[in-house]
Image (cartoon, rainbow, N blue to C red):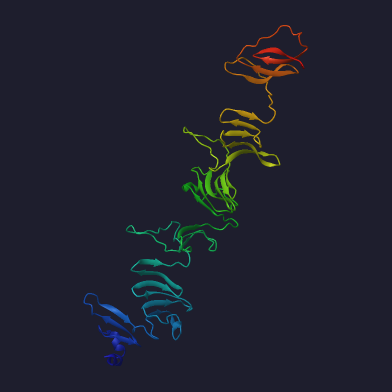
Length: 392
């Protein structure tokens, strides 16, 4: 039959090749097949892929004739490819493996469709055809999935993109890793959360930040709070006003810029729970640094001590001890008060400041002051008296 078709010459092509009669081109063939009674179709076939036979159908201009393209060595799954004009790249469709449909290029598979669904491999960028955004959507409650160690990157610097990945580099702890850009030029390692009002806004908060942090901007975009590192190895809770507290190698430092407000319930301020532990209250001495002002210490009779050496101690039991002189600088007159005694300072007149004493019991006084020539003027219960002095 093949010979008779060739002998008939052009008349064959004028009248058509009958159905189920193949036309051979080397080892390949074309045939209008009606073997399927419900779907007659044009079959273009090659031999099974093996050895030097590649199951490829190659389209291109006349420049591809008699060329060793070198791309399809060993191909056994059928594919249809189109070679570009200068014969240095190709794209096509077919099967990249058994039961795996694919859109392919000379650089690799762009996407494949197998039993597990559609897999897409990106070697560049995805662009929207218009100013409108495009949507990646999952259907039938399925997930949009990135496999382990695959990276979702954002930004225009491929060497310093922020990226998200499920990282398996640590064999004992696979984690969701959100990597911020390393600080350089105008790139800062900050992840900012807020409502849509922060979109496309120059916030101005994070210029020059070099340590990673997470920040949350308030609704009117004029303040933020966050967590991160304020310096190397220093963890911090931060606000736009400064660090609220930091935790470094020296422990926790808390900076208050306002008030400490306690609720209705009682609150304990506790030193570390270990023998002889205490906490100190410190203030800064100019050009010296922080110095101890007071401390709270536990003992059989716990006390609040004032001074670097706790010279003044106020005990839980109600006692107090003073390790130095006590000075009164305010002028307060004395007066009898039930169940109370007091010591103080009272200025009787210019250049005449005296001790002011008060006691519950009334004081008896001698009218004749000539018995002794030396006397100490004191103030007792609001009146001036003289304590006579002698050396024997």
